Length: 112
Length: 111
Image (cartoon, rainbow over all chains, first blue to last red; front, side):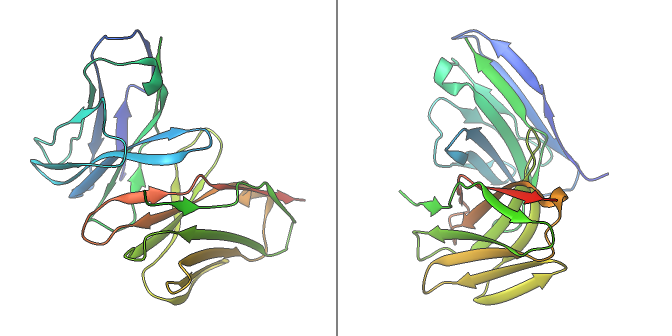
C-alpha cells in the first residue's frame, strides 16, 4: 500500500529537549515536504526536498532542520523546541514538484 | 508574502445541492492549483488539481481556474453528508517548488 508514515503520532515534551519526527514514503517520490497546521492559519510549509541531498526552506523554517540522505526518508528535527512549535505536523510526498501531494497521518506535537 | 484566501465558512448546503467553494491567490506566477479535503482529525487528501485555465471535471467534482482573476473554485454536485469536511485550496509556485495553502472552508451538507 502506498503510504507516507510519520512517527511518532503524538509527542508531549519540554522546552529545549531535541526531538526528531521521522517521515518515510514507499512510493519512490522525489519531492517531500513538511508542513505545520495551526488553527486559523492553515497549512504552512516548513521545508521541502526536491531529491536526495537537496533541501530548501519553505515559508516558516525558523527553529527546524531537515535532512534527506535517502530518497524515502525526510526527518524533521527540532534542535531546541519551544512552546510556539506546538502544532500538528504533516509530512507529504509527490512524484515531482508542483504535483499532487500524498500526506502522512500527522504528528501532534506539544512543547511544554 | 504570498497569500491564498478562502472563506472559512461554515458553508451549509442541503443534501443533493451544489456546493461552491472559492479561493483567491496573490501570486500571478502560480502555476498549479489543488483542492484537498480534510476530515476532522485526519490528514488532507487530494480531491482535484488543475494547471490550465478553464474547467476540469472528475465525477461530482469540477475545478475551475481563472488565472487572469487569480481565482480557483471547486464545485461539488449532488452534495452528500459524507462531503462534510474542510476543503483546503493549495497553490504551487512555478520553479520555486513551494506551496501555499488557504486556511480552508468548512462545508456542512445537511441531510
